Image (cartoon, chains in turn blue, green):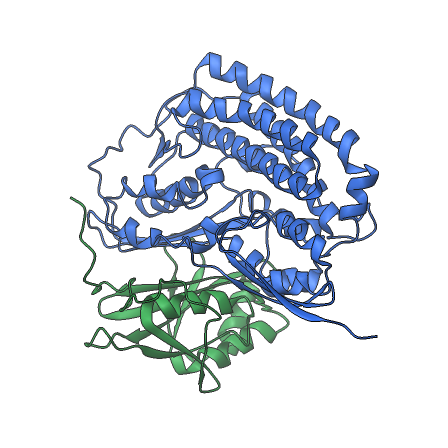
Length: 370
Length: 160
């Protein structure tokens, strides 16, 4: 039997790709034999841009590190600066930061469902997830004035306090999300068509997770029990009771596309639980350290901070020379490892499964290129 | 920091360390080395059963006082120790020249994309067994000359 070898180049713009990137696929018949990934089309020089602005001004640019969950970039940067300057964050500000982080995590995971559902052909889930995501974006707009690039965190706290009306709406959204996760679970998780497309597909082995430094839900789906909120607890996460979902291999293989989907579904439920616990015990007090103002200069020093973003471990190394401008800000982004694993995961995959494998990794080209 | 970890570290690396200090206010130890010893020490740290620093969490380069300072943020998945390895290289006076530095991609596979990025943005040639590490693709647009992340890169104007 003879096979035809062919090459297909996707990108930089293609509907099945998560953003501007090029994918060169070599095929042996209908099976991918090898693959090369090229990124850099969305390189905006964010780290350099941050060096050219005053300290508080850099926050606006860091929002664009991962536009789908901007709060995480702001948070990791603010934590690093606060560590250098030994700024105390009031308890109320820490709680507000956690609320916004978990809402962003839910929003990001819902958009993940949209991408996966589109590749699988499930229009129902696309519309349901987008509908629910709108409620969270409305909450961001209510509090911060913006839906995506919220520019809300400040050194020593947050830009504004939460109101009773906002708290009520957040409770409603959390209750709704807990109902919705059950609904999504009933409708999709063990839906025959969905299982056929996702079960035992592109499993990420533990060796690959460890060698490539993969973190976040992709790693936890493969059984790697690592969550920055538990391991290097920050803000008030050590005072909150929550579980870290791991892949169970319910569809046949641990770490497959199905596991990566279900882990995120369970994380949404956990995030709702975290928010409710925080709101039930919302501390009184300041929403920002009163000693901080826009003219504050960050003293000389350096710091490395980490947060658990919706895609994995997001790190930030900041160096200050005691001047009005940053010497250096460097981000350790979780998407870098996710892009490195693509050629390994796509090997021996059928051509029709390529989009779903890419969607299952929750890739952020903006974060990768910076 | 775990006392046993520090004792083992001092035992294995005695005579190879230039300076030891705390990294920022984190309580994590940071070790300064000569760059030519970097790969050898990286292997020791990864392969030792008591240290097992098998995860390179982050690689960062900072331009500071006419030198590039390389910071390797290491983590042990089994014992949850952290360590920061540091080495430096002098920046050439001619800003169009690149410099060579040893690569740790053979020790920690996850270093490869980080080194590729740094190579292009800072003009640093990472060497694996004497051979320059070649990135698979270019991050920067074609036709762009110079190394944008260097302080001497002249196209940048500070925003008042």
